[in-house]
Length: 392
Image 1 (cartoon, rainbow, N blue to C red):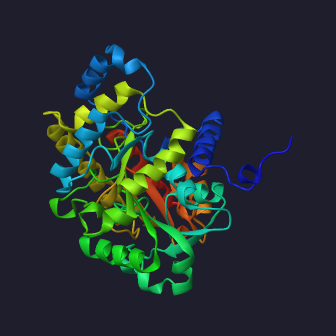
Image 2: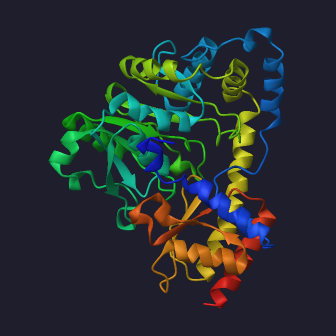
């Protein structure tokens, strides 16, 4: 059997490996608590389920969907985008539905990359960025994110020849895994940088609605003058409404960029089930949405404080998360490997965290904790972490 190099030379997906290790530990009889995956533990809210029930029973929704996205989906997304970010989008030309944001992450590189091309990615960063670039035949140039800069890339440190050769840059704020938030000043600098070096910006904004304080409310790169012409921003309903299994998201950008992506996507798949599109888009303007968002914020603030208090008491070094579901924490000094640290935690306490090196070499000294688990599991996990530290 002759497999392609894009398969044989690509490592298995990080979270698949973590899940396999969790299953293996459970098969050995270990009682496992996982705080590794960013999958909301609470169900999709009832008002979204009610909308889906209506749309499922509408006969018009059971045919092939539009490749680009249904007109009413794009219109409702445009209405939400203007209300949320103050940015007007043309629903006919500047919005496109996707099968979740990972669909966009994994396929957008094919729009820009020819074999041998390069692209810029942050390190640490979501592993799918590099995988997608590699599948498209390109290679990734890593931009380190360091705590001293609050995990914001130093654009001035990127060599001119490297930036000139790159086709695009992947950016993700609020950031996974570091939970950092970028401000307007950074996005202005990024747009200027991209224009100078003829780069496209792929801005992953999947966590735009997961934040804890008003001053940290994430912005859209589309709010920056001139950004639309050279940027595609990715959005997801997964985190916004606990809809990870539904696989629905959207991208926004100029007509030229959206049309280019549509050319690729229309040859890859047949779009998103219309009932899901319409239910998701209607949820954005539903009167129950603001209350749900507030309740979710309070839930995760409570969990954040539980974890932060435990980590502080145990002497771990970390920044308090400002957005997203994650803590980005330094491993104990007696360890030189995040993989070894996390493996020890699993073996000795049945506790699963994500090793930082899985997000890139710059993550080696860190591990990630997800807040997407029931409160009692988080309490138990912190107690297990206390017991582990006592044994060091």
